[in-house]
Length: 217
Image (cartoon, rainbow, N blue to C red):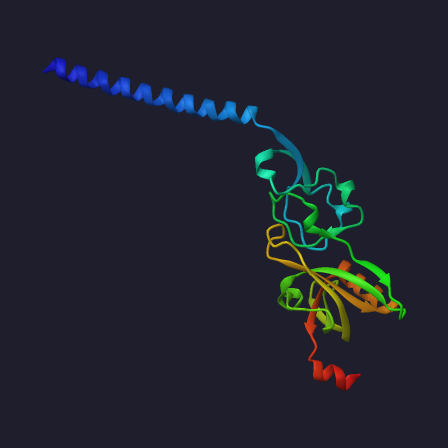
């Protein structure tokens, strides 16, 4: 009887030691595989980053980290140097741990049309641009939401009837939540006001009813 008990105990001990050795071997194999894996250093958010943040203000919020090359397949636009972004701003909010990529940044740009109005391009979350359901030729009202010095949130209607000249939907796989770039035809003062609104708060667009717009014209 004693021999059977001793044999059972010995078998249990051997099985336990074998399991520990197997786990250690598998863990070591994973470590060796990771050590041999090709990595690329890219910028990773170290804190949540709000939409509209200028790239030149991100130095304290991002850090170069080695990322396995296999995880970056299809993300060739990953950023490794903030200087690559120039004057651009974040097109969508980013969460801690997100990779920085060119698709997640945009720049408000203005070009002058033949009629003297400027074409100003804004990249907005879809929810702030009628769910992304805008088309060339639509007319929109422009709202600005901002925070007062005492911390109160305010919203004001800047313009009632602004022409949309172009709409580009960004790749939803690259931009969390979806975003669109909307180009508006504005005069010099309107363009400056909208750009200031993008910098100091947030811009929202609402679709103007075609019948209402034609009456106002």
